[in-house]
Length: 229
View 1 (spheres, rainbow, N blue to C red):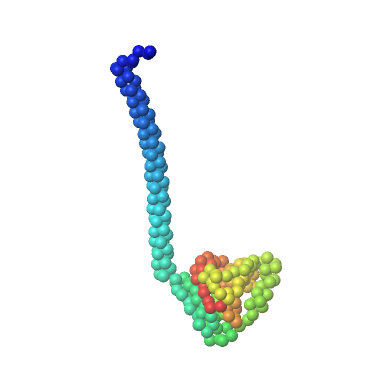
View 2: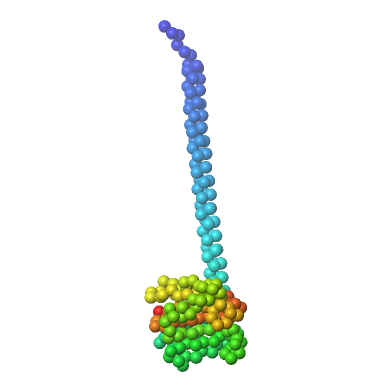
């Protein structure tokens, strides 16, 4: 028969076991705390990144809005607008405020015959290369296009299909032609840019007779060109 353990030794064994359990529990709690802390830190980082991204997006949108407002104010102060008759397709576009215009609309077969030039519009007899010419003619689109086939085939001009930006997606709009280079078949010195496009039963020819004005032609006139197909 085994001798009975002393009471003090039994208490010591139980105390040691209790300490071990306590250490294990504390270790588990510590690991859990570290895991939770890491998760919480990551979430805070994600939230901060999302918040920073939202702030950056909002700031970019505000800057874009302000820039557009500045551009709109600039445009209002520095451009004029031409509006044609609704009878002939309501042709309209903007042009620089420093330009003057002479538009003859008395001929029903050519209801728009316009001349635009900085300051004062010169006489046609001066053989001036106009900043902008606008003609709405009672001639078939394909006939006018054919007139430029020789200068295109010779490489004196290039051509591509074209729809004005404001007319993209508008029903019944037929793509026209954008040409650059020699836009006058009889005058090799006259280089500029031209758009030929159908407007109802007529054809619109809108063009700049000089390279000097092509930027305005593209960025102001063509960028704002509208009509009723």
